Image (cartoon, rainbow, N blue to C red; front, side):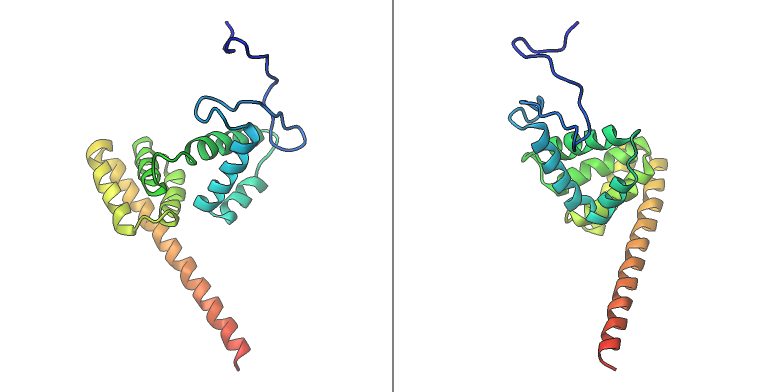
Length: 177
C-alpha cells in the first residue's frame, strides 16, 4: 500500500537538517505550501522564542545521532507546522499544552511549559486557573501534582531572577566603588 498522492514522485527518506537535508517540494498537510526547510527554520525561531535560546541550545547540544531525527521532527512539526499557525494565540496554545501535559502526567514537559507559558504572556494566576480547570477534567490527583510542579518551577524562576538581580547589583557595585 502506497501513501503517495497520485502524481507525486517517490520521496527519499527524511534526514536531519544540515549537510544531508532533503529539500521536499511540499512539506505536508498542515502547511502544504511550506517546504521542510521553511518549517524547520520557522519552527526553530518559534521554539527559541517560546522556550528560550538557553533551553534550545541545551537540547541541541544534547542531540545525538539516535535523537537527531526526533529533534528535527518536533522542530518542523510541533513548532514549525503547529505553533506557527495563525488560529490561536501563543497564550491559548500554552493553555492547551499545559492541560495536555497535566492530563498525560508529563511532569518534566509540564514544568518546561510553565516557563514557556510565562514567556508567552500568561500570568501566574492564569496558570493557576488552568490547573484548577484541569482538576475537573483531568482529575484532582493530576492537578495536585501540577500545583506541586508549577510551584517548584515558579520558585526556581524567582530564585533565578533573584540571582540575576544580585549579579547586576554586584556588577554595579564593582563599577561604582
